[in-house]
Image 1 (spheres, rainbow, N blue to C red):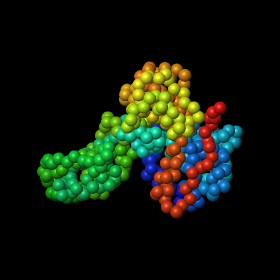
Image 2: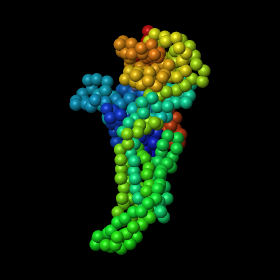
Image 3: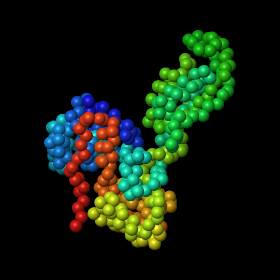
Image 4: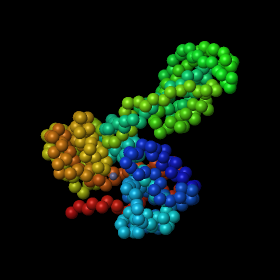
Length: 364
Ligand SMILES: [Zn+2]
């Protein structure tokens, strides 16, 4: 099995197009055309993790955080990033980072966070914008089903928990072909009016070239008439942060103790108690201070995230319980999810969970 085949499975888990623009995801180091010897899954691809990969004969390291983020101008081994990269290159080890592609996925980091706490009825906290496009095309009634199916197979027509979504209407299309034309219906220079079906479907914008290929391959006309629009709609299944509900509301102190236990937090810093019971909770694994307002607007009783500064605790405004549970802790089960996913998709292959603890923060 080639490394690139494993990367294809990782893209199935979370398309890289889901990542935020500022991010640096995908294959960061290495040659994807090499045969894979084993996969080591970790949170941070530090030098000790590369050592572990060497010891366990894994030439692909899949990490959550990208070790290369801001770019390198010199590679001399003067810091932890350069040392990890040098060691990986020297030992023919590829490094792949998934990061916000998995943060934004409905089954990703924040769903894993919600599941760990027992939160139900989850929904995305900040649905992604400018991610959905609409295709409109016109064809004969006889060709319509073939075109619809081809578009669905290419990934169009998914809305929330539904697939194969489209809208079709009928009308009269008209055209006249020139001397170079070869019309399916009518002849050159003939004014044709014919029954047509207008098909409308939405799709995630990164799929556009695949969708257009499916359209052209399945459509019977010489010239395929189509229109693509950018939609203002948010994508309800993709985005940062997640909301979830406890079946039974609980006191704030009980809630924080549950979070501490389930997420194995070294300590929790939190805003003043609101004296409300906790039922609806917003979570955002990693640095999530930017989402405090979203959590309040969503009516959450508590917001769990990490990397909060002193003044940001004031932003709770006594409207919710704001808690910083630690960056690593809030994302701690992500690597287990990646391992489980890969093991389900790739059988009889060494997919190993790293044993190195890469959390840079220690607690007294
Ligand atoms: Zn993080």
